[in-house]
Length: 297
Image 1 (tube, helix red, strand yellow):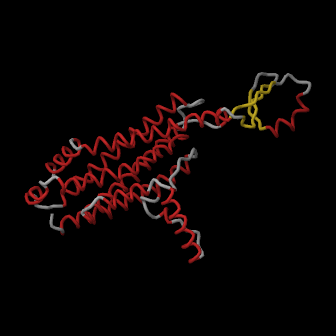
Image 2 (cartoon, helix red, strand yellow):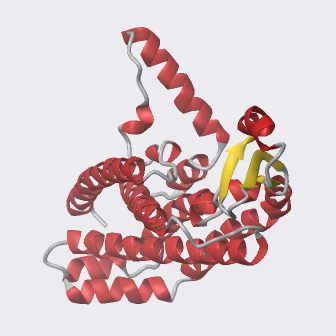
Image 3 (cartoon, one colour):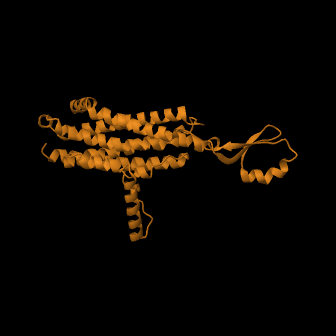
């Protein structure tokens, strides 16, 4: 088993698809961040509708424009200073504010898993390797471990790149809300592992990476979002219930999984993502091992 894992890890780090998909993943996440930075900076410089109030005793606090208007008469004879606050000074610009840019990693992890599984059949030595093994599912276990490792590298590098660009280029950026950001990254990583396992299973099942790649690309488009919305409307109308299909499939939960500055909300979403991902890993990998065992290689 360990020899098979080492063999697949060696094949992964020596494959062009590993470096190309990883580079494209990080480049696209960072590129989206760079392209939208000027617009974000302009929005952060806009008036927020809040004021920083400094009273006669030097105490400072924040009030909305409505509250300032109500208390303006009280301050006519007092030594009170008002300074309008910009949007960036009110809303915390932290890693969580740019966390959604890491979401593009889902697509590339699914693509890598499809290319990696297809490469096993295209390399020419798969029949010899399978014939020397007592259990052919060892190959599948080794491949899913490679996909899980690739997912961790892709998510971490993408997050590091996005946060580094934000820290360097975004106005009012601060390293706050890190516990919630960590929960977001963990949930995103688990969902990426589930997407990678689905892509791996479909490639082995169909002996083609075409459908897996198409599905992975669709996950990052508005078309899939429209399809999900249409299904939700039809099912909700049919059964007279408030239904969201993305809450029941790990690969679709990426549309509902969002960063929240509230620790409780972020924890609940993380638990939901973890439950869906674990179920997906068990089902897809179990079926994948069965397929590889029953089918001739």
